[in-house]
Length: 222
Image (cartoon, rainbow, N blue to C red; front, side):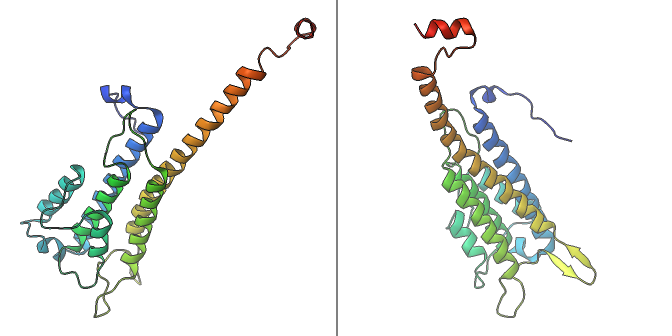
């Protein structure tokens, strides 16, 4: 079932592209927070490296930093730099929190540093597209990178004799798909604006009052 959001005053000053981008970033962050929860559960030793007293506290810190688009306490890097650090085999900190924070901060940065777009705002289609590729790269590295002992840096997808767990890959895939759609829609919006302007100009200058009957045709020949 599709759930429509309640109408708010803010939506009155949002265009259709604004609203689409707002829904995209909202749903992407929700998926990202679900990924964080699942990764912490599969890698329980990670949240303890953050200095938090519980997994819930560690998650709350990461969410707050992403939602407020601020630095994560104890971390000196942001967006793609944080993603790189989390997937560095030599990193000794909380890989889960650092990775999720990096992805979330990067997604918001690609949206102009805002979680909510209004009429005065505009997206850079290339930056949004690049963000989708960054998530794609992070997904691949997460599955491939190993430590010096040959163990995965983080446990995520599982394919074994006991079954298949590809839920991590599916969540990453939904984030990539939504982001790609907004990038394509943003690029198409500007292309259509040029086409629509050209069509209206041509119609206004040269294609007005085309005959639709014999009488109109006779009159136009005078």
